[in-house]
Every structure is written in C-alpha cells, then in structure tokens.
Image (cartoon, rainbow, N blue to C red; front, top):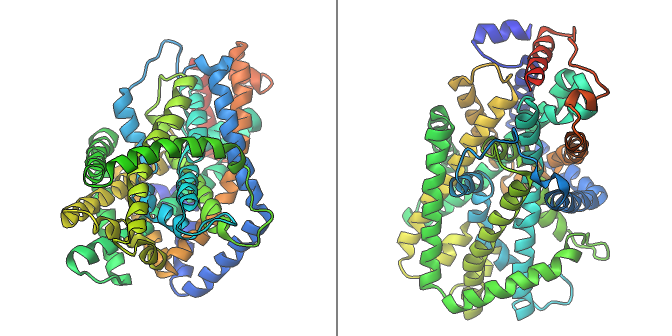
Length: 539
C-alpha cells in the first residue's frame, strides 16, 4: 500500500521510514493545534518525570562519550581514515569548519551568547554564591562553556564519526540504522533499522523546529527593537514562513551551491559582529576574562561533567543542562550525518580534534566577547540587562547591543545573521532527513527536500502556539531520551567495528561471517539488502 502511494506521489523513498515519520509528525500537529494546552501539559509532566528519574543518565552518557572519543583519538585507531587508506579530505580545513559550525550551534550561540551568562550572573546555579559577585561572574562563564563546549560537540561528533566510518570505510548507507549492523546484522536493513531511522528523523524534525522557534522569538524581538513590529503569535508564524521559504530555496540548490555558500557568508558576518563588539566593548576586560575563563573551565570540567545536583532541591539543572543535552541530542542525527557528509578522507584523530576543539575554541571566543561584555554592562549599570533577560531571553542580544555605539547597525546585522543561521540549519537538516528516508541508490528529489523544510516550519509554528519557550523546552527534553540511548549503542558498534578493522577482518566476518541475506518481508527490505551486499562486496 505504501509503495503504491509512493508511486502515485512520484517519490523516491523507503516507504516504511518516510511515511511513518511524516505520519507521526502530522499526527502531532493535528493534535497540538486544537488541544495545545493539553499537549503542553502532557509534555510538561513527561519532562518532569525524565528530569527526576533519568537526569543522571543524560549527564553520565554525554560525559562518558566525551571520554570515549578522546580515547579513540589517542589510541591505535586514531590513524584509521574515514574512507580508503589513500583517501584525502574533500574540503579544506577552513571550509570544513565553517560548514560544520554553521549547521551546528551557530543558531544557539546567537540566542544564548548573552542570555545565559547574564542569567547565571544574576541567579547563580551554585549555593552560597552571591548574585552579581565576582564569583558569580566566573561561574556564569564556566557553566556557559560547559554547556556549549566539549560536551555539546561530543554529542555531534559521536554519530558523525560513526556514520562517516561505516559509510566511507565499509560502503554502508549513510543512515543511522547502518551503525547498528555490527549488532543487528541484516536486521539493520529491515523493520528494526527502520525504527532507528524513524527516531532519527523525528529527533531531527523536532530539534530543528525547536531552534526555529527560538530563532523566531529572537528575530521578533530584534524587529520589535528596530522597527516596532509587535511580538505576537501571528508575526512569529509569518517569520517562520519567511525563514522556511528561504531554506526551501537554499535546499533546492543543494549542498555546494546552497548550504556551503550560506555557511561561508554567515561565518564572515558573525566574525564581523564579534570584531565590532570586541573593538567598541571593554577590550582589555574581555581579553583578561577569556584567559581566566579557560582556566576556570578546565579546572571545573572534571567535577562539573558529573555534577547531578544531588543535594539540592531546585530544578535548575532540568531547565538548563538537561534541556541543552536533550536539545543537542535531538540534533545529533542531522548534524552527525551532515558532519560525516563533509568529512570523508579525514583520520579519526583529525576528525575528533577538529570537531571537538575547533568549535569549542570559537565558542570560548564568542562567549568571551558577548558574555563578558554583557556581564560588564550589567555590573556598570548601563542597562538593566539581567532584568530584561529574566523577562524575555530572546531580547538579550538586542538589549546588550543597545548599550554600545551604532546599536541600530549592530542589531540589524544580528537580525541578518540570525536569519542565515536558521536558514542553514533548516536546509542542511532537510538534506539529511531526505538521506535518512531514501536508499543511497535513489535520487534526491527536490520536492522531497522541500517537504521536510516545510515540515520543520509547521512543527516550529505549532510548538510556539502551543506554549512558546516552555513548550519548546519540554518537548525536546522528553524526546531526546530515545536517541541518547541510541548514542550508547552507537559507540559500542563503532568500537567493535574498529577492533575488527584494525585486525584485518571484514564487516561480514565481524557479524560471524554472514553476508547480507535477502529478507523476504518486503521488497524494500530485499532491495536494501541487495544494494548493501553489492557495496560491501565491492569494498
């Protein structure tokens, strides 16, 4: 039945993955529109349960994966390439960095670069710290770097490394289900594998939709500041429609013509904004603060990485750390596949070092310039920044820029950067979802990519109308859990495959010498198995 529907619509997909994912997303929208309060309340209850009972699991899982990746990089497996032994990277280091950063957390830094440090400065997360004190300022920067530094990029690097390894080293399809072939065998290309890919698709849809929602709130605040446009649900829906239209145009152009050019443009604009704030802001204070922040971050990282707020009664960690980890985890399938797509030819050591440390260094500079400048503005009393952030975090960057010269120009530039960041996130996510829902030997149809771009916009609008920022946080904290579990299995599968690779065994020998047998369940499963068998045999 699904095959007939696909043929009638002229699609090129794996029907079990495509229609299941699209159907669940559509069901959510259909239920959330008339029952917005009930849906918001349900996710609020679920999020509370996850935070109380499984918050420790998020903390332990992400920190353990960081240790695992660092261990791989310095181990004997570090010289293994994502591809044939003689392969070399497709992109230069600079182009590689701009593309992975723009599709990764560039959108998040624009929203939280000012809001988070100022919030922690005014409301310290640790007991016994006086709000507004030097200790509060130091802790605010440390926690911000913890949230957006090595741990965040660990969540992106884990699936990126595994996908790149299995796709380029063993010619398996570039989908999340392929990573479980060493564990599931041929079942990875049947219903079990489809279930994994559906989870990945839904995580990507809702993760990017959350980012679109946050970006829309911030963009609305900027337009309100610049032009007096009201901050209403209708305006936000219109903004989502505009961003989605731009993303759909970009995604139709493809990776090199669309995403690559937008990413390069955006990193230039972001650096220009950073240079402006550094020049007109407290330059010496920023430089001193960044040096100190590095030391504070490295000093606190060993205990902060395993801190679970065991002896306190507040829900601070649920609102901040657990939300960030779940949000980032929901992005992991899409960003992981995207990073893998642009990382062919690199060694595991190069990959881990580049993906973990280069963006973390940029994050340090970003928070050093924006966060420290904003804290200095708050301490000097120029603007009641903390009060505005507590009322509406989306206005933080514009309230901060208002304290600097040429505030209107800087705010207008920020609006452009926000639009492009969210466009690159949406269009690269659409490319990845399309890859997840079709076989590698099927063409990538423009209408399929556009469909997923539109789906992200619809879900983002639905979440905003169903409860705004709280709804975004609750949905993501709940939905990040399944993929967090998949990340653990992913690490196990990768390590088993690396052991076999290093010792000279093939992928088939790893799964007890079995080839990819034909699975009779459906024709899609049979075609998939035949396709993978052919590619593995060629390898």
